Amino acid sequence: MKRKKIKIAPSLLSADFANLGRDVEMCDKYGADIIHLDIMDGHFVPNITFGPQIVKSIRPYTKLPFDVHLMIEDADRYIPDFVNAGADMISVHVEASRHLHRSLSLIKSYGISAGIVLNPATPSEFAYEAAEYCDFILLMSVNPGFGGQSFIPSFLRKCESIANFLDNNSYNHIEIEVDGGIKADNIRSVTDAGANIIVSGSGVFTGNIKSNIEALKQNSN
Figure 1 (tube, one colour):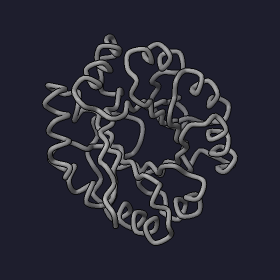
Figure 2: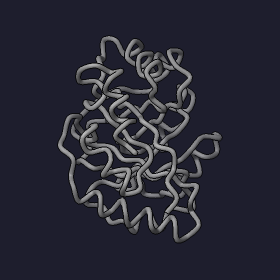
Figure 3: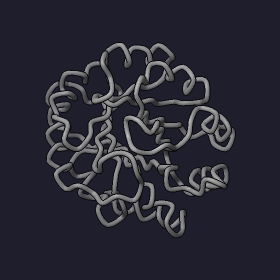
Figure 4: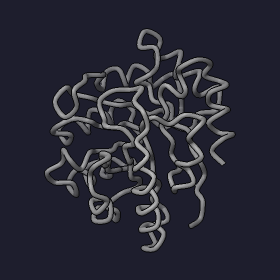
């Protein structure tokens, strides 16, 4: 299995909501590769974060790709709004999508990257069936809804099986993203399992952003 470039994606869920622009600029300055935005509606997950207007308001602070993770019901209704707000990547949950191919096709129709998301207990077979329509697969290593949760170790087994499936079926262009409980002390186990886009919230924003990003990058290989 050929190792892909490791990309660090700070999750703004753990940033200072009163200073989002500043925190985005700091992530860019100190070597982040992607900005991850968790969109929650209070229905699919038990929390509410922010919508397209906030995404649009912080778009001028960086040229880094915006990775919009829709933890919402009726995602198709809002995909155009997040594209217009500046999203470069959009992922939808298989658990919330009635017509997954339609959702992925809609995202791709705007010329941006489309991904699916699997919760910790969702079977890997969903990723196998949808892989040909995806640019990336986001695997949750915590139950979605809140930041600062502890990493679920069984994620590693799922990540390895999906990475092997992609490798064995000529889907080498598809990236594997992981979100939940990733810090400098466990990132290596995640990248060894096959993930290359690493979302980290409290692992970036608790303490010094510069040193945290540097530690994540250093420990990932």
